[in-house]
Structures are given as C-alpha cells and as structure tokens.
Image (tube, rainbow over all chains, first blue to last red; front, side, top):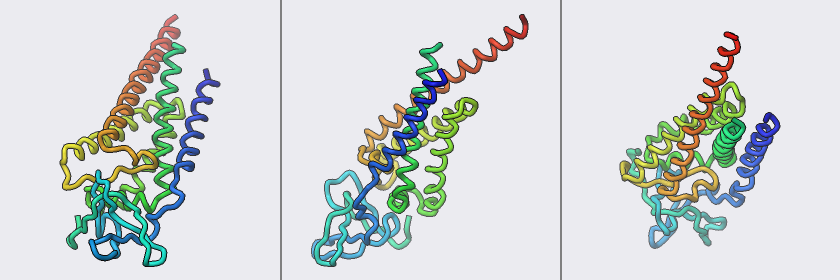
Length: 88
Length: 151
C-alpha cells in the first residue's frame, strides 16, 4: 500500500510542478509597458487594476505592447476601462 | 478497504496536483498574477496580502495532504479554500461586482467563469469525499485499537 501511496504522491508532485513550468508563458507581453488604443492613437495604459481594467468576456483587445513605438501587438483581451483617480 | 485507500490516495493526489500547479504557476509569473489580482473587483489594498496568502496557503495544503497524519487537516483546508473560490465564482456570475474580471492561474485562466464554477465544484466534491473517507478510516482505526485493548 505504501508503495502505491508514494507512487501517487510522487507522480502528483512531479506532474504539477512540471506542468507549471511547461505552461509558463514564454513570450510574456505583460512584462512590457501596456498601451491602449483610443481610436486614433496608442496611449500608455499604466498598471492593471490601478489605472485601468480589462473587462471580460470580450473578443476585443484591451491592451497592446510595442518594441519600437510604431508597431503595436495585441497583448491582453477584454474591453479597456480607465479607472477613475479615486481608485477601487 | 484497499479500494477505499486507493480512492483516498487519488483524491489527495488530485488536490495536490491542483494546488501545487496553481501556486507554482503564480510564483513563476508573479508580476502578471499581481496585475490580475489588481484587476479583481476587490480593494487594491488587499493585493499585497492576497498575492502571498493564496499561493502560500495552496502550498501548505499540498504539504498537509502528503503526510498521513495531517491529511484530514489538508482536506478541510482544501474544502475551505475551494468553497471560497466557488462562492467568488458564483458572485461574479451573478454580477454581484461592478465588472467581470479575468480568471487567473496558469492554463486555468483559459476557462470561462461558468467552466471555472464547475471546475471548483468538482474539487469541492473531491475534498468532501476525502474528508468522509479519511474520517471513516480514522474512526475505524480507533475502534480497532479499543477492541484490541479490551481483548
């Protein structure tokens, strides 16, 4: 019984930690500054949950990232919503 | 008896997988997790506490579930945590909060909120099953010990 128990436990621990590493986001756009599109230009969005929120479910793009300031790539899904200065 | 023990090991292993996976994923992508916590409809002043409390309690529950002596505490802990997550999912689905935030934690974030609710309910059921089996095993061992001491 002890053998079965430790086989289960070892498998569970190895699979969960291995799974977490395997599904870790490789190209993490979230680490770069986030921009939102106001219909005409891209503006700095700030910190998620502090300066803005992304409402889901939505097929829209909430924020974008850029490496050169010219080309913007979609990052987070949702509807962009600026948070008023008073905060949550 | 053997069948019940295997079921118990399966329940503990499933919960360990869930909690370890979720906590390690959060620590591996801590900045995103902090942002997602800020995006929740809870006061942002809670974020510094929650970003440590949630993954750490998940790891503590996983460790408790591994050892036979602390397994019952682990099952109770997982029931409390999963019930809280379930209530939170229900509150979001019932539009209790001003907006619907993203759901977090590795690939689990790909689930929609209704899927999240079913997922949480499944693990609440596993925790209850684990408590029932573990308690039965515990009382059976006490009964056998008393029976042997009287003989």
